[in-house]
Length: 333
Image (cartoon, rainbow, N blue to C red; front, side, top):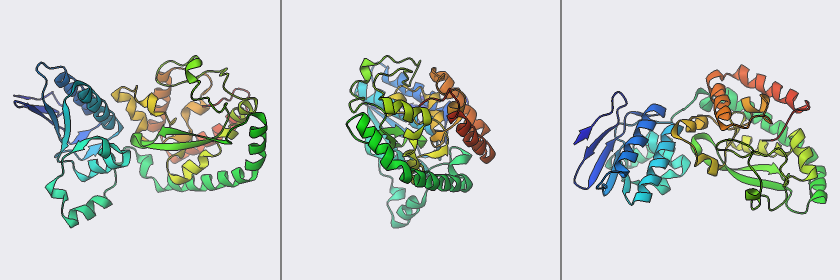
């Protein structure tokens, strides 16, 4: 039996024990939503298929929504005991899977087309698809490097004084690191000056979340230290992130970098915010970051940034950020 949803290109071929899902040429938001619903239907069927095989032979483009649909569908199949296999994965898609670490999580059949030395050489040269013009803008990247070098120079000057006052105020490490999700959901370690008590992560469940949706915020978080409130008010706690910018994990301007547990709660369309690199600043920081408490508003601001992106717009947001830092209503992310 073959089924073909209208206009989206996702089709299925059901056998006795295996159902093959043919992935279209592009797996972006519309196709990704349909693909996820297709896998959900298969995982709720009676009887269940023994294996769901995803045929990627025609697929040349996958964006963040496609990655989100893959992750969600894999987890659903795993929970129902159905094998989940990717077949004939082409180099552009494999580059995405390798970058995000999904190649180690998903079962991927080896392709004879990629076993020769020449094919392997070409595979190493393949870049992940450009999900947004900002991703491959060399001018934006040059601006990031220049800004990061300036920021790290300033950080070098103030590191020792800040380290002393942080340690005097609260025993514990000077720096705080946390795993965040960047472009296409790739995980990286974000660095900040510690502004909370050392066991803040363990005590998070004790603090009420004042935000609505897939992120956490509390205006009077009791885990924040006295010096930490000053660091957050002035955004000095974020200066170590210039190292993340220099490494390419982040950009000076972009979207808010979410935590993995936040991303796990995303619906497929919400993964679109990961089509660009996360930034130290962005639309939400300059449009009342202390007042933004609904995840829908975060999504709206992030998608507005992607739609309106230009180098001029980035510079505008940088200057606005500086102005916000000197206002009375600035706050921490």
